[in-house]
Amino acid sequence: MPFTATPRSATTPASATAGELALSGGEPVRRRPFTSRATIGDEEKAAVLEVLDSGCLSAFYGSPGPEFLGGAKVRAFEAQWAGHFDYRHAVTVNSWTSGLIVAAGAIGLEPGDEVICPPYTMSASATSVLFWGAIPVFADIDAETFCLDPAAVEARLSPRTKAIMVVHLFGCPADMDRIGAIASRHGLRVIEDAAQAPGALWRGRPVGALADIGGFSLNYHKHIHTGEGGVIVSDDDDLALRCQLIRNHGENVVDDLGIEDIRNIVGANYRLTELQAAIGIEQLGKLDGILDWRRGLAHYLRPKLDCLPGISIPAVPEAATHSYYVYPMKYDARVTGVSRDLFVKAVNAELPEAVDGDSTALAAGYVEPLYLSPLFQRRIALGGGHFPFSLNPDGPDYAKGCCPVTERVQEHELMLSSIVRDPLTPADMDDFVAAIEKVLDNLDQLRAIG
Ligand SMILES: *Cc1c(COP(=O)(O)O)cnc(C)c1O
Image 1: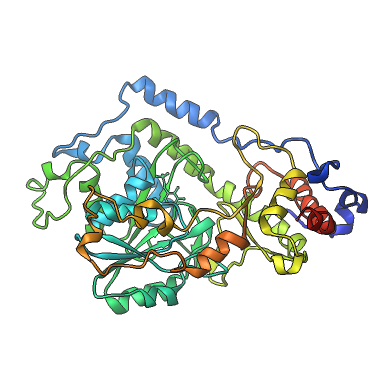
Image 2: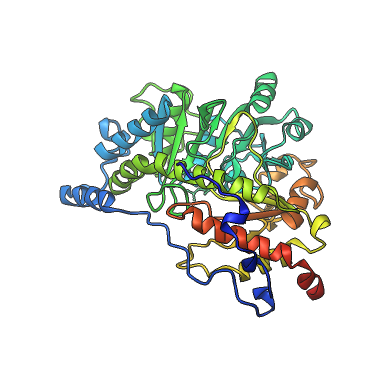
């Protein structure tokens, strides 16, 4: 996307940043709402009608035969997803939460196994392993990428460690060189939660199957969607087969397929419908355009935000290509003398309200570190008897303070914006920057508030 940045003076008249902050009753930088995301077009509508006309909305059977792998649309979508990114296998599921559960079963987790996870992610990254009786162990994040810090992973290894759950948070790939090296040194499996990172690259290769197994979410909020849905990817034939078995009542077909190792083949129904697969095929065709658009806007914003005091733009490691699920910035209150939360409130007051929940506002932080939730604080998961935590009485540390970088980032530093998305334009970015500049130019008004 050839968006070119123009210097500040050409886009931001001095008058736009002067005057009273909207938070104190002044005129906001912009009132006109940002255009909503248009996620579904004529292509998806036509594809859905074709499936409806066929009368077959899902062709799966939970028994031996070709329909064990689903209908024509499901199989075509999987083949196209694998082909698009050059993965050996793609296995669709009805959500990526289901996909995480399936992948965790496929790698052979056993009750009492430990899985090292980041605490700064959507809860399912960690809770998925509990369904197999495995225990999440939280390792701290890197302060720049917000993904697992390999040194912290190393410090949390124990004889019980079986796997590492890597999350490519906000669309930024985690350091797969160092995490891959730790995994091979200790014989661990790696699951990549790439829900927020379709098309993100590490050393030029798409994330997801850089190690053993991984996948993507197709829920409404992600880059592309099928309402709800997910795709598991792997280059490993056995893991992909095990995913197909767990997805769809595999216990009924293991005899027929001559499968000896039936561990974790307690099949569920995690199947995607033909309707969703038909939508997914059209959405996949739009992904590259969406990624180009977002990367173009991020590139445009870079020089405009990089020069501002107290604001850090997203750090993108040399080996990484970001996919900008959201646009993460860091804030330094020591520079501004104003708390992050008040700063965020002041910037949001300069910008229009979100339309239809399609938020473009700044968020102060992301989620509370997962270990602080009642599930981990009280160690109550499956049943009331502390299973599976009870399998390891001197189990992992879930105390406040156990991942200090995550806590600092969440409480004081991170600001997230969804402004970097289609169909917004460089002119919209200019208003976003102008709102931030106006607040920075009038910090004394905020210091007076407190
Ligand atoms: C969205 C998301 C999930 C869950 O995906 P669903 O399809 O909503 O179940 C898991 N992990 C991360 C990091 C996510 O962003």
